Image (tube, rainbow, N blue to C red; front, side, top):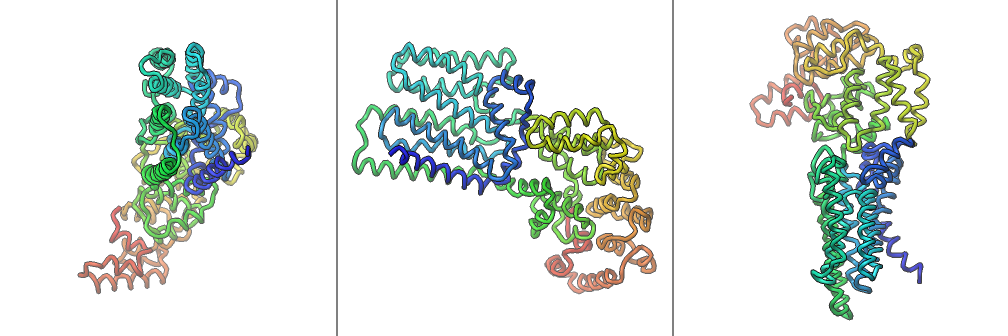
Length: 584
């Protein structure tokens, strides 16, 4: 009989696990970067002494394992199932045997919706578990004096361990007391007043920055921005509503017979409808593809990014990942126009001071051998991130400081990463480069970028992109990737005068002994009336023949409204099509 009681929670856990793994597989990999757990006494002491410190530490600790497959879904499903079990125990305690126990699934379902958001901390879900445990034990007390003592002690403990969730606990205790005993529920008032005082005092004495962090679940959201979704408040609204219903119905007759069956059916439909509505309302499909691409870029699975990029590319993020993948395969200038291009911003997305764009830019600049800009963006990503530190960006700061020869700074970040579980082996393997110029210069990755530094310090990317990339490309002529990036940037910007300058200066040098196809296509446009220089500039006969056929189609269909569609079928993969029909 005892084992039968476990069947329902196990089924719920399984459903949650499968749903989370299917919908948030790459989301868990992404949010692993939001917080960094350090096995350090100073780190643990600092966190533990702060408001909500225990839940924050536990959240950090669990989050570090999200980088492994299935672990994120396993942990979150377990936390949410724990909330459902505790809710069912609470409802059963208030109104035994009631079909209202079906509503115990509402709080965990409402928390699923906010877990879709990468700015939300799992700390909030852990704190919610603590709050439910505290409320269940409150219901066990009979005498008012013990209720007062327990609520005062628990409010203080919850505030310290869980944060703002203590105000939710005190509010529900007061609500339940009023439902049970009317306005004479004096034993519930001291705890509420104490919780209010603690939250107010924490802000008044600058322990917590804003009142919304002290009184609302905003504490469990990225502190630099206000929540852009009301999903974060759903679980805080659902819990008191369920307690109110249970408290009121506990005074009425029990549900029996057809009435009970009908109530169970209606409540089940309500829960399913709530789940369906919330999933469609709060699951942001806009970020799903981005998180998958980010994961593949992190693991170096460039072919998968390229496979995902067939067809229409919807935004600059996707275009940047595609072009970075092509460059890593050595196919940027050769194949970039075989895919949808969105102008120069699809090669180098503008910075918007968010950690997502900062991380992407750090990766892009690092790929382009723009080490100074990559370092700066890694630093900005850490500053702007929800948790204030990103393990992968610490790795980038190690690499870029090694390239610059800033060994004490690189060593500082190596020491930090050595205090983590996932990154410590990587950090230890990079100690061999510290204070060892020869090792850095002989490394295929670090040495290549050190040779591309040149004489100018380009820590801050400027608006003069042509001069900047010319400097980077010519600082290391042995690296053709730099020349390809420079040319791709100019072509996407449709700046044919700058492209002419680049070709005149660098073609047939060590930088570019052979021209990629897209570069040859651009040369035919620039020197269209000078056929004598085509071969001199490196244009093959095959490209010349294709261009002549392209012009015939243009001239034959010039007056047709669907000219773009006619040309796209055969020449949509060429620079000529991009130049004529795409807005840069």
